[in-house]
Length: 257
Image 1 (cartoon, rainbow, N blue to C red):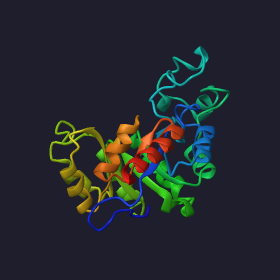
Image 2: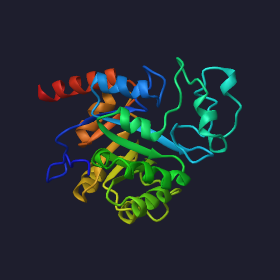
Image 3: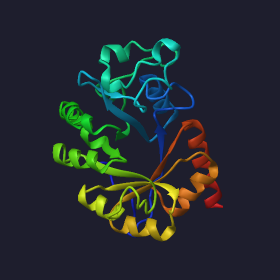
């Protein structure tokens, strides 16, 4: 499991700078080069998204299509990646001649802790198969998702690997009418990544006292990092890791004064 970095009273010992889709603002997102750059800059963790191609390959891509990330018109209008083979997907230039990598390629190319966000429930079986083939990587992986069904599947397929629920805010009653706490308990999650809406000191303390690591998102400014440290978060995802690491240093310096 990813190490628990919380105090007994729920406050975080460390705050992890998490590279969102690698170094999203500095290099084409969710590419091997972007992940390597983020690690060179010094991120503590990486976050990326996984879907499934038509021929059953676990691919690292945020959107359901290539339209936004394709570098030219030839890669647009191809339809959902779930209906394309990996050969078709890999042929698309998504910036600087780079291509959509597989989950296995990303595991092989990285060394830090990973938040593996599952975008498509149908990818769960293949994700579990790939990770099972790389048991040495299991301790640095946490499966995350907005979709409880994905976390339920991973709990069944790979129960030894950490899980975290992502929400747009709290309580998010529309998506989780039975309550976020019930979802966390059902999937045996150990982390909760919440949008800023509804986050309070009381909520964070309560969640951490219950054993959950906490993170808020998005983190796009020094003020966001300061807020995260004040609330006792275990980390936050940043689009620009260089900026994120600088914000963390500045925020810690201000607290130490």
